[in-house]
Length: 380
Image 1: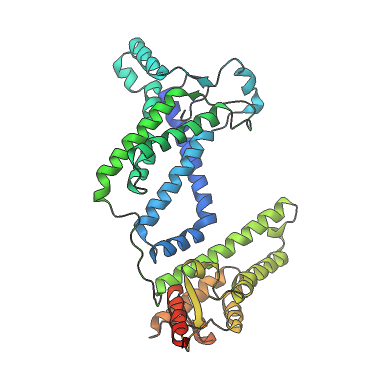
Image 2: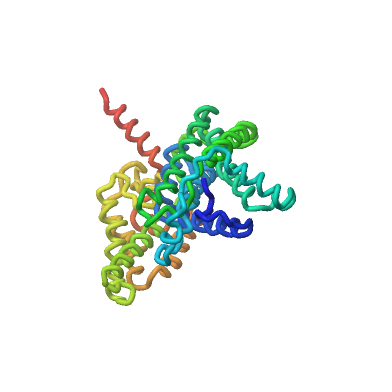
């Protein structure tokens, strides 16, 4: 994997490091984008697998995702200025380096010409080392998180590296005007070696680290205020994300939603009504997207297992979301703390909106257990 190295080989150490930092910035941008789009499904997956939001497994999963997008970023970016005659200047250069151990010959030649100390800080040696280091996490995660064997890890590292080299040598499979990275057979060796070393590191340290895939715990409930708060925040996040997507699409096609206060208020009104009244009314858990992500169910306070009445969804929407269409998100900054303050002071931990609608939250697993009990009791 040529980490940031274009077809030109005259690349100094500092320039290589600068390019790698640029690629890491791309990785963070991609990761942030994935986080924005998949935060709620990710949290929901945590509850499905572990019965709770397990902090360490979540951190490990997020790190794996960051590493994955880093592989993509380091493979594709930065893009050269194709419009500036880049392809014409590189017309005589081959994007394929198929001589085994050619990179070691380059290091040896550089050392003979410049000395050992200069070689240790040179771009030619750093390029080889970075190809090894960048695949260390792959081997580590395969050993620690996935419990893969060494032969499987070696095969996966080689296959991933081969895919990267083909992508670079073909110029993103012909999507780029011309190849702008060199596909080097030595990278297959150094990347695979990095995966193997990472596997040994993972095997060595996994006994000292928490289990990344702990056993699932029962989740009978009732959910605490922190979990309810996360559900509310995810509701707000989903609402803001959907409104932002609509506004961006509208501006792209020439509809200036952001500058039209009436239209923007109408979008807020419709989006909140759909997310928190219409869709939940057809769901058995009566939950909005955020509340559903933390596996909570809105039930009637009288029996604690029957789905909340549909009219209660409308009342809750009027209290929490209707004013947002006219006052903006500042209303949630006012009403949500009040809601949770009432819940915190209440012996039953029910918020103001729950008291007014005769509802409360229960866990999804609690409702499933209650339904199973009712079925058993009803069986003659």
